[in-house]
Length: 219
Image 1 (spheres, rainbow, N blue to C red):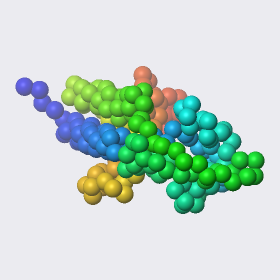
Image 2 (image 1 turned 180 degrees about the vertical axis):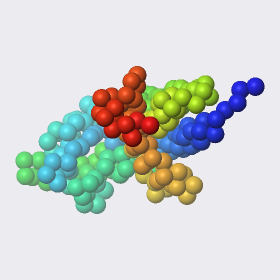
Image 3 (image 1 turned 135 degrees about the horizontal axis):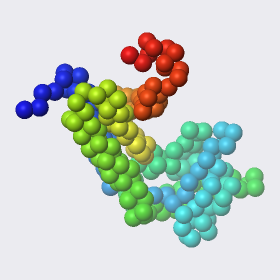
Image 4 (image 1 turned 120 degrees about the vertical axis):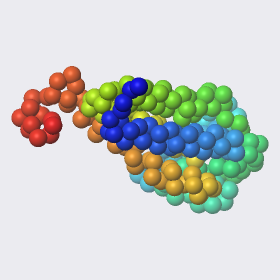
């Protein structure tokens, strides 16, 4: 029977918690994809002014031009932190909406229709929130279980478990309370993957010269 060190059990909590965060993130993303729609244009913020940069269909491109300044959506004045995806959250495909723009200093009011997200968009979101985290989490679990309490292996396992790409499409306003708590706690914790990878790179395969000089950090 394989006897495991207590450190392995403690490290095992990291991929377990990472799995909870990844599943919640994936579920919220798929939920958002099913309940929202694509206005078929994107924007950038340039000096606190929201500019249309690209229309993704011929019909939309015939009305919205690159460089148009976005002023309002459905008669609501937009702010500099406007998000296309958040603004059309819970908007079903086929919904008519109005946008107010400025083009060469002249105001225009246009009526457009939201569309379903493209299969490519769906595939990208699903791969980023399910397939990629699954690969990292499986590797993390295997490293913990077969690490024989090797410090480097456990450190890499923790880093892999926290490498969970987040697709910030959805807002948490409409999410259940339990999902909000998981995302609020999980998001900042996932940022710890970078210092873990950085530390791993300084001790594998051998401690770096800097750590050799600072022997207390290499212990």
